[in-house]
Image 1 (cartoon, rainbow, N blue to C red):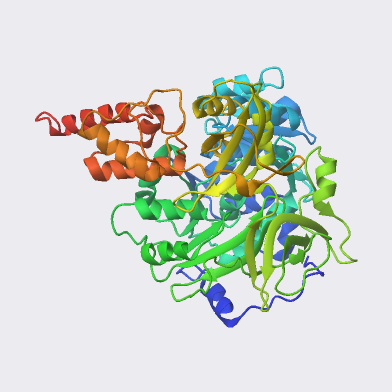
Image 2 (cartoon, rainbow, N blue to C red; image 1 turned 90 degrees about the vertical axis):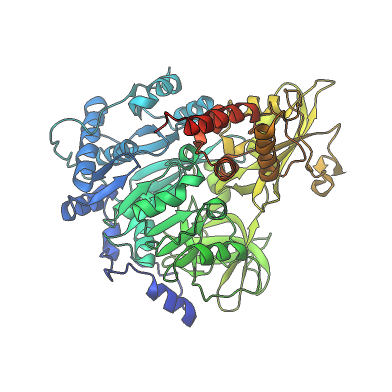
Amino acid sequence: MTNSSSSPIVLPPEQQMLRARCRHPSGILPAFAEEEIDQSITDRFERQAHLYPQRVALGDGTRKVTYEQLDQAANRIAQEVLSLRGEGQEQIAVLSHQSIPAVAAMLGILKSGKTYVPLDALAPVGRNRHILHDAQASLLIAEDRHASIADEIARGLCPAISPDCFAGRSTPRPGLKVSPGQSAYIMYTSGSTGEPKGVLHTHRNVLHKCRGWIQLVNICPLDRLSQLRSLSVSGSIRDVFGGLLGGAGVFMFDVKRNGIGQLSSWLQREQITVYNSVASLLRSFSTDSAGDERFSAVRLVKLSGELVYKSDVEVYRNRFPDTCLLLNMLASAEVGSTRAYFVSKESRFDADIVPVGYALEDCDVMLLNDEGQACRGGEVGEIAIRSEFLSPGYWRRPELSAAAFSDDSGGAVGRIFRTGDLGEMRADGCLLHRGRKGSHVKIRGYSVELAEVEATLLGLDDITNAVVVARPRADGIEALVAYVVPAGRNALTGSTLRRRLSATLPDYMIPAAFVLLDKLPLIGPGKVDLRALPDPGLERPALDTAFILPRDAAEQAIADIWRDVLSMDQVGIHDNFFELGGDSLQAGRVVARIAECFHVDVPLRALYGSPTVECLARIIVQARDHSLSPSSP
């Protein structure tokens, strides 16, 4: 089913050579025929389970399951869903972050002929309730460990169940015929209206996306893929199904729980061959990991979701083996991957930003100006995609769908989607990514509509005006900054604002800094002068806690680490790390630096549970005293 609108893909010799090099050392190539996208996701998965029943399908650090075990677990979920809901299309929600039972539930829902809606267990209850209600889900599936949260989310909306999908006898497959054009999932992302919006995709779209990925990098059953993202973000589709539908092993690592400092040893231990992440995560763990590991098993480092800089290529050159390639890809939740650019240790760049590269099959890229006309050569324009494998649109948002998707493709096969990304096309057909258009930004790989954060701020009683922008931190990573005008003489602090926002927004959408202003600078009537907004600077923000200097050497050392990681002039011993603007990536860097400084291992959860200098110092001193005790093992 080749898209007849696509022009023949012509690659320069270097890219042809690198694409040919990108394969497992065994030389095994994938078997995924073009016509196989005209089936269901579970048809393809069941085929892999039949071919490789005893091969490891999923691992999460504590357990591993084979394809046969995962298939059986999915069958049990499917039968449970059918016994409760019967046949017919409807939405079933899954509450998880990263886990084997959650993947089994997703597959089971698809086997039952229904559509799954992933909810992140780490997101605020209010946000998950909104998604559950908007998706019109008839059932919420959660693991036992999330049962109490699931009950709170589902209360008054739908039943919540916690089935044990890995217990019991062999369960037959439901055997339902699922159409390739049927909805597979609804994935919610940040919305410009102030509320999250659901992106729909069909079984055929997922299979097309995964086949393209598998064929591009030659995923084979001997590959072991990393899965570092929440199952509620679009990048997880390629991570999970891109492995399972190719017979490979998919290995989950929860960065937020385990910390960046553990990622290096995990890659070695699990012998990961294909590493997937956003650039900022690669940058952070490669900078802070101890030792000189070169991760000998990794054959490909794949980055997407953020701009990739020349400095990121240096990290790849320094930390990965000479046989390893780097792949930069442009992708979106509505389309999937649209461009690819391979890099080797010998590749050189004139510019600081790495290109997103050349065309992929069945996907035409156009650059459009503000009038919707094609840009001339060398002009920067909005990236638009023409394909027959676009999302059907936004769930229950016809006005948003009409604004982003168009059937006016000039008689060619497929529809057109305007991505909101800006690009520039080189004469040889190589696409350069020039960032986002308007108020849509990427924060640590997550899509964020600034309008949604602004709308949430403006919904607070004691705020009269607010604007949110993305600014690069000292380490080059984009972070959100909120400029807030309080109502009257109300005294607001960053602590208060962060606490209120956390009730409805996930952590990646909460600004790292809050700047209080008497009024917003304006260019004209109602138009904020973004260039006149002051830089947040290096000053410690206003918090609810009083500033107290470190009192001993341990507290001083920890405070110095925080100051360096957060690029802040001073840190008090009672300051909350996250209220100072720290995020999960910076938390991982802090834990790694503490291990280097004090020669004790402090788990990342200690920083989340005790996020002040005083508490951390107490934990470190106790751990050090225990290690020095004569009775210690």
